[in-house]
Image 1 (cartoon, helix red, strand yellow):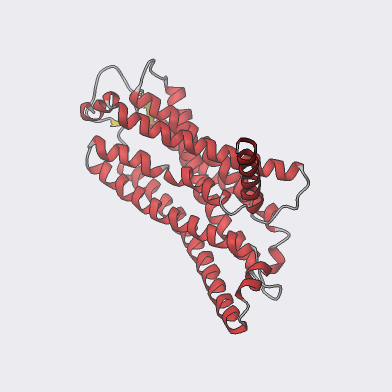
Image 2 (tube, one colour; image 1 turned 90 degrees about the vertical axis):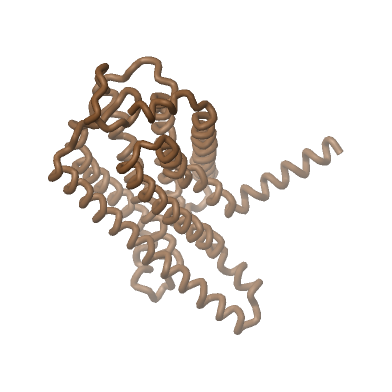
Length: 311
């Protein structure tokens, strides 16, 4: 624990984490606002608009919760009590779980969007948003039931140091967990992650196959440019594929670093775990916004007017 406490004196690492959180909160807030404005102006919602908005909201709240944890790691002023520790830790883990779920559902919904009318998936195009909300509600109850018993193991760090406690923040620690509870929790997480990452991989593979076949057809018809105009959702599909690929890479690194942290109290590993664990939440809104042509055209118009005004 003494080794990790040295983090409180590392202002560069602290500022880097705050910078990442600030950029991520700003990007996700802008994405949520963008979808709200589209809804207010009566624009037709796409099948993936709702999960993208929910994912941005989840990431925004997750980064805010991470900022609270970072503050208690680097700039502890007043120690939290048991209730505060349990609430913030539960909220943070709960939001990370929902991020995985919403990302998987986003990939599935985009695959449904690409499916032809003759496909068995076509009938879900109108029903999917309602089903998605119900699925998220159901999974939130499941996640809560899995994580809630672990709250009894999160405590406010006592004044007397103890080598048996697992460091979380300056205020919060984890008491030793029995082998049965630890293995049960890990197995449930592995099964959950395997299901959602598998669904994400399957839907991403479907989208890659669809894009490949469409490219071949376009080459045969010698009308690639016209075809791309006829299928604007391909741009969104490619973005979601990039998003899912980035998620898988960051998810793998995050799990690897989490495993290393269990075997070592190296503060460098702990800082890398914080930064990499939230990179997906920070980068994802900008990847999504980069495909919104209406937004890009608006920025281009504003830039042109600014240049003409001061030119």
